Length: 120
Image: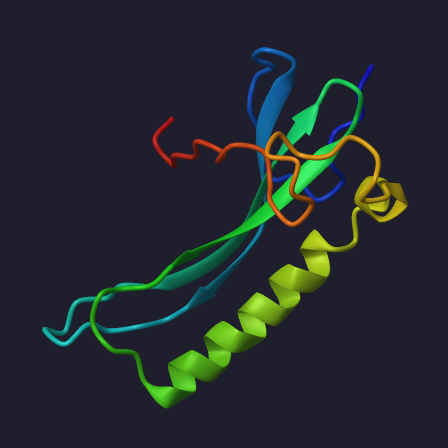
C-alpha cells in the first residue's frame, strides 16, 4: 500500500498509476481596484506514483490588477513557506538527478504538466 503524502489535505483517486493531491495553502487578503475581495493564494499541489514517488509544484493565484507592496511581501512569505514545504519530501531528497530523468531528459524539467482543478 502506498502511503499518502503526509501534508496532503485532499487526495484524488488513483488513475493510471498516479494520484493528485493538495498540500498546504496560504491566503493573502486582497481587494481589487473595484473594491471586490480577491484573495491571493499560494498552494502546494502534487502528484504521487504508485511506487511512492512524489512531485510537488507551487500554484499561485494572483489577480490581474496590481497588488500593494504589503501584499507582495505577504506573497513572498507565502512562497518561501511553500518552497520549504515542497522541498521537505524525503523521497525527493533521496533521489539523485541521474536516476529516472524526466520525460524530456533535462533534469531541471518536470514530467508533463499536472492537470489541476478546484472543481470537484
